[in-house]
Amino acid sequence: MNQVVLLTQLIDRFEAFLFDFDGVVVQSEKIKFKAYQSAFKLHLDIDIDDGEMKWVGLNEEDVVQFYFDRYRLKADKQKIIHSKREWYSDYQKNDVIPLTEGIENYLKKLKEREKKVGLVTSSKKSDVQIILQKHFGLDVFDVVVTAEDVKRRKPDPEGYLLAMRRLECKAQKTVVFEDSQYGIDAGVASGAKVVVVGMCCKKETSILVKNFIG
Image (spheres, rainbow, N blue to C red):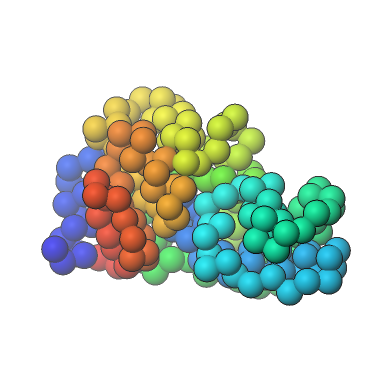
């Protein structure tokens, strides 16, 4: 199906739209990888590869553990995370993290149609707020669920279920936009319709779009 038609049909059929952040709203994963790369180089003098981006969708502790397992490393996890946050903060200040193509206009269309719009991410609230403030303002989403709001991370659906409760919307009337396998699994487990953004693999219950141009 044509992407333009598909994105329009979603607006017609559903009431609530929940977006992952990194890789869906903003294209931040490459900059996050640079921050992890710098932190591992500083503390362990190792040049990590991108791990085929299999860590996308994980929180900080799980990303560090991913690389510990990949390279058979042992170190103070919190020191690496602290350094990664400092590097990422510097990158946020000095670099403009690009939006996913078409996302601004798509969010505008949803608002014009009075749809419920939420953000569900494994990122920290402070990181999300900095980028939202630069691009949209803090009130673009009706509900924002970050790492601090949940006990169980993706692929657990807790974040999406919490957002649905706050928006007072049923899963059958909700669309989830995701780009990572962990996020896709969380969206499917929540009972919502899952749309995969910019990724070749997908669950049987999901559909695929390149971006939000439509």
